[in-house]
Image (cartoon, rainbow, N blue to C red):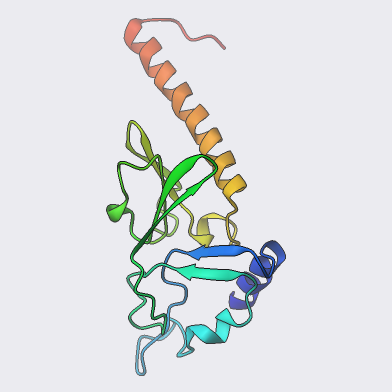
Length: 166
């Protein structure tokens, strides 16, 4: 799987592209650790093989994986949005229109934090094991928002007794 992720990353990311890694870049097993929970390789083993310039946010497994980043949260402005980048979605910023996170693997892809703020899971396991581009994320948000509105309209129609059209 590591070789597949490296290949997919490098197919999408150019040398000068900026990559935000939202934590738990690798799961490095401790000596004598549980079988099947990662090898004892350091992050640099993989980092030197990946294209792009990297800004890493600390994840909950980063204490053991040789990623020494002190960054816990990053705010950027891109595409007209203020975006909070964080590993764990419980630390998302409800004042930002968009929050990008990792940590939750495939539990969900997009959630509404409040009426004006969304959280998007950008972990590679939700994006076919390749980095998500901003354009990919915005397309997914657009489709999700459209679906959310359709569900809200159906609920409103049901509450009002309006017949469904097929």
